[in-house]
Length: 111
Length: 112
Image (tube, rainbow over all chains, first blue to last red; front, side, top):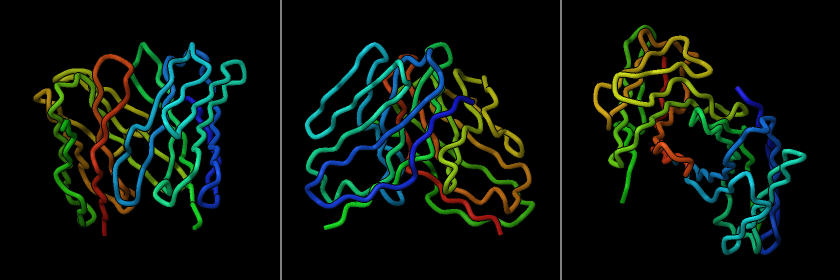
């Protein structure tokens, strides 16, 4: 499958901003996604960006896409303890409707 | 509220048993997927299906099979469970467009 890479851990203090990074290899990606997984639960879609966009903002979440470098980031403003979870980056290839996931970044928010 | 429902949250089976993991979605989605999730390895695709009675191998199909007799139901079958199949199994579905997967809450399978 395609390579989608993320760092495994990130630790921030409550109230700070968190930035979770992701790199991918397939330049024909059509959509890129961020999912959140809380302990013991399935994955919940947080946001997604179409590959012809550079940025998308949704309340505290900002997604940045650098298509040239194949780099995707998720910024969470004013991070709260409830944001502690594993965050997965994913890409989809339009002809296959298959998703490729990164290994997930575990975000730990310290009070 | 739209849903993907996995029949069991926790399951313990013995080595060599035949195991069925069931997944049902109520969104009339065409596509359904089975992943396993292991620490440090992320999500790995086992099998997927684009239509009834249709299946495609994912990245790690060995030791598994699937069945999709009805659009809303996608079953994962472990023909002869082994300890290395102890994992969290996640089912997902999606429509034909690119608006993301909906995941079930997962089945944590332990093979002893």
